[in-house]
Image (cartoon, rainbow, N blue to C red):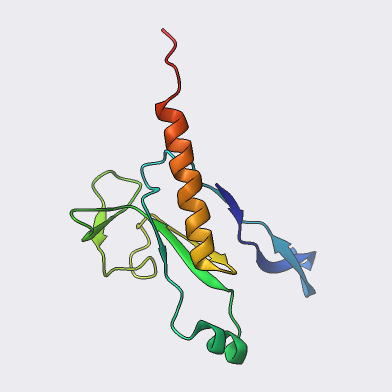
Length: 133
């Protein structure tokens, strides 16, 4: 699965390497493989009253979160060390070592359905793949 979350930055220019009045867009591409151990639960994390808040204050759409939980869903995996983890109540804002991904989509429920169907299909193809000896 691949997605891009671009962000705005100052364009190249002559004032300390940046332009004073021009902006540029930088791509931020993420690739997550279906057999990755951090591809666990896919959940809808859209804020309450998202449509109204987006109309009044702006927004980036609905949020789909992908993370890996363990210990009966009470802990989240962290990285880069194998023994880093945090309780489920911690977010990536307060604990930057957590491995989770947020996708901004138009319709979170249909995106979750498409992602889980693609993941299940990929896992089925991997399991049924003939082994070469």
